[in-house]
Image (tube, rainbow, N blue to C red; front, side):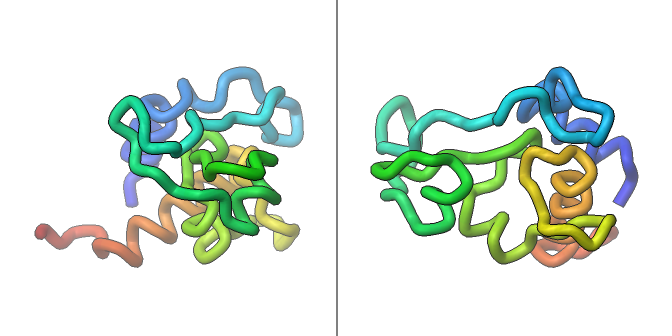
Length: 111
């Protein structure tokens, strides 16, 4: 997957995560709006993964600079440093986006 495609996704979703610390994590946790069925969002009640990642006991939120749903992050989250994947780590988020995108639609194919 070209890095420019990942960069485009990161820019659209979160402006590349905003301010980053020297370790590649975002200076603040990035959360999308509550997925409560309002404002054109689908309603996704809080999952165990969501409560752990976004802290909301009622609704899931997309998390991190690439805006993953908690269930997607839990299934596909990866870290190039073999540490626990963190959706607010730009390296982990980019690797996970590449893995997930390749699994959903292998690069070079069309729908």
